[in-house]
Image 1 (cartoon, rainbow, N blue to C red):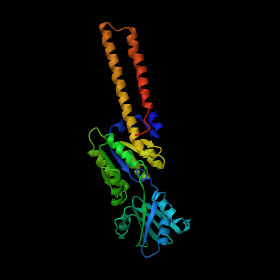
Image 2: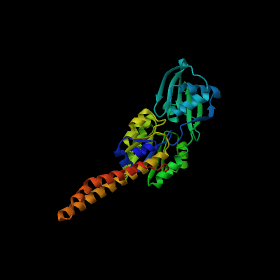
Image 3: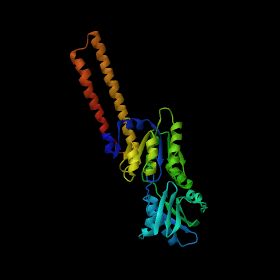
Image 4: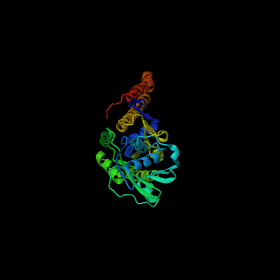
Length: 330
């Protein structure tokens, strides 16, 4: 655990290191975990209004949200928001926002949210996160928001596969086009898209049931919606830099610098630690067994008994100190 802390990784208990060494399936959230979470509005397509008006409505609807997508919309708007014009803002998990703006109901979210209120959104195969908007029950257009991969995301996936990870999976609430694009770029084995927070728990349950007997499952996430999945996985790993307090609290391991490549590094630490533990057990029991047999036969001296007790303990401690030497790369 001390060695892992040198890599910027907080492990909350030694048992989690042991589980991590046996992990053969790793499930990732997308936004903020494999991608930067620094979104930018790249396209605005209004219906029956100007681009500026559509962007203004989106910014007002997302005003109370701290989600990276909402922040990007507010940044693109670039003007102060008059909160007195907003009433009854409600965040609908995994779908979007419903708010009263200037006395009119405004919906801002994904296609599921639109259809939930009987509104048919514009059907385009866009690669990015699409925020559909509706005003007073009428479709008003969409804004396209795009994210980018973290610099070391691809390196992290490749390193984990080299370590023997059998399956890498991504769960996301984004559209299928976005999820499949990210999955192809990173070389992930499976991608599940358009998931609500509850759907993520169900997918993890399915993966846990399908896992091999000894193999364990790890989930990596950063958002408040990831907390139930982090708690359910065999070992939960949270991004601690920008991650929510709920995710950090629910996780068993926290990566403080938000670099996914640290997962492979701390897994190497876990495997090395287990190797040292097994070495010490075999060495200690082996020496004690030999001295015990020699003592029964009348060949062992008092000094041999001292070595089998104190000497073996000292050697085991010195050997265990090797766990503090950790590789800086993966």
